[in-house]
Image 1 (cartoon, rainbow, N blue to C red):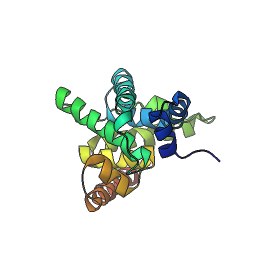
Image 2: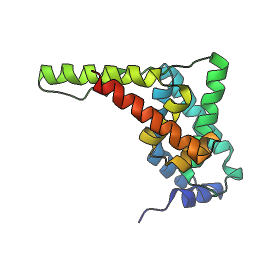
Image 3: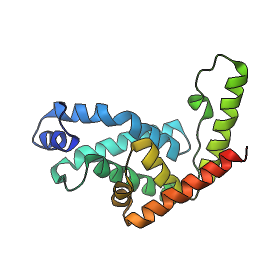
Length: 177
């Protein structure tokens, strides 16, 4: 059985570099996708992604398993995004549809997938920033409403509300097409 994230982080805190490698391998893809969908470019996403891991490494001595490791990690990601948006006054998400379109053998299926994803990307970008962030934290990172609340410094009801509104708006946008 694999060690829980919290146990691995404590092992890393105690000097086990292999524990960090395991954590990184478990969470890198989801965290990177979250960052890519939250900012306008791959270059910025990569910079923020690396910075988040660097901050996690720097904060290892202060880590205490009072919440799930993913909540702790995405709190760092949330704070880094807030800093980024403040600094650059960014408010929209850019999703690169070409990266999301699944390989389709039938050109008609490919075109339909592309159109649906384009509508979804536009609807996602149109969401208010707090709703978009809640949706991405839930869908990309698998965080619960309680984890989202902890990561974003809000209460559970606000996180649930943001998720509910985001999901409803996205469904409406997809059903209108």
